[in-house]
Length: 194
Image (cartoon, rainbow, N blue to C red; front, side, top):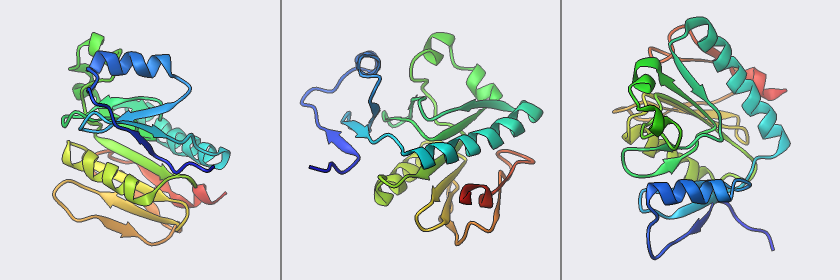
């Protein structure tokens, strides 16, 4: 039997934030998220090619961030508690320095209560596009200032900005800009075609 991901586990009783954090630690071999209603979502791990491309994305943002030192970069194993109550783990997340440093350290140790300023979701072979688009809309509505949904299947990118319609980049023969959120950052999409 082949499972379709994501799998949603509906609970009769919603876990507290501390209970969910403990549940994630006890099941650390699973990729877990939680929607705004408290439902636990099991997300499929990525395949090797997607993991390779995730490292490329993280590496490029890391190099930019190391040079400019404007914020903090997080990988796909990091959970964030969004203002709507959902706990999400984007593939790449970046938070402006002053916003991250304003969070008490004890909250930084768990699922920090913040929506990242910049998000990248890279669609893997097992990812449902509608699910990812809904996640990106959720990020945008809870404070994300710039989001890229990179779809390897169609070689398109959907860009999310607050208060604006999405913009679709129709091919990987383009260079994306970090705009005013990541000033000076560009990403050459052809790096994902290797």
